[in-house]
Image (cartoon, rainbow, N blue to C red; front, side, top):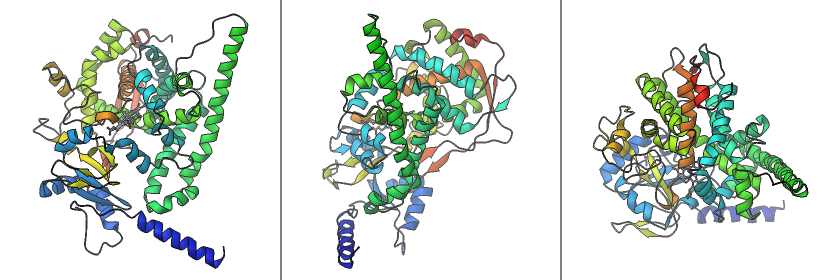
Length: 499
Ligand code: HEM
């Protein structure tokens, strides 16, 4: 590079860095420290003590606060503004995800597709994945195969691989509906897609450590981002191959005057709905990205609570048995598992993060008190009231019946998939998670298999602790779970299994 070109490039980079610098916030910054010029201490405090920063900051300032991160800033609004945030059209979740999860970077096509301008994926999730009875049987059979392969049939206690053998169950069950029979159990496919989701989230985490203006260059060199770039064409090729074979089958059936085979999975639905505008492999990656990690974490949180509350196992087992006996493997059976529903929601309450309703501010927006949220800033709403004794008596104690009692007392917002004034773990307003019905049904079916077929316990000395990662919570990754197949043999009949 000539010296002149180098000087011009450096000048351009400096100008862009200046233009793209974070805007000054009108709200008190609660993690500002003397001599912390590089913001390292602020970032550490946000990472390690976010709950204290939020609760004390909001109490002290009686209004929005700001928290500085290494390369960005979040404005935290009090929980009382949740309703206002949900209904304000200038506060956008899609833009927030595009910005924070770097849609547009080569290799991150899953994100670009899920939050792109074409709303086909979201429409498909709402209309086809939701309360769709026709997918329940397929998912149930996939769960039977998945448990047999990953948890085994051994009637003696044995350890499972906590992360792989819980995530694997969820990935397989979801894949039976996302990609269909050709690939749902294919080890190579599952490995590729699960690997992509992990690499993608790690690449996003890695990129956040770099200043915003460098990221469009840095990603080319990060191993996790490179892994994503490598996987996308592989996934596209595999999926296009399946689609070609399906087309051949249809053509052959036509030639032979037979009725054409029909496919009941997201691969087929997307072909019909997207009119070729979305690369089918990218859509598969986007579904996996939205569904695998979120649902698997919820699954793990529930499993920990089941082990911790053995007194609830029999009532849950009875309910699952009765509902499947009455309604078969169906949405109706899942909907009628009301104790399980309450148990799942209580697990979700106790394992949730500190904030909800994350939004990007699309234009200068006046808060109800007249103060301005600047365009381009990012907001989140405090959700620590989910552990408030005024809302939930004995809030730190797990109570599997909590939401069932509320429901029986006439509360119409206490089901797992529902959102309410003080419960936004699935978000709210026009961006509320469209996949929550699918996640709920998948979880209930997976838990039915566990309750009817397995006993589970922690390995000796294992005592999982919830882990906070900044604003977010994660289930202890070091859990050691042991399982054994129950001997009564009745599960096969009710779950429709042959052997
Ligand atoms: C237990 C599992 C899940 C949890 C906890 C969860 C949570 C969330 C949350 C918090 C949001 C943001 C909503 C808001 O801020 O208003 C969201 C959005 C979204 N979720 Fe989920 N989700 C789960 C499962 C799924 C599944 C299985 C799918 C797809 C099959 C999915 C697809 C989406 C999509 C597409 C959005 C974006 C909606 C929009 O921007 O309008 N999610 N989810």
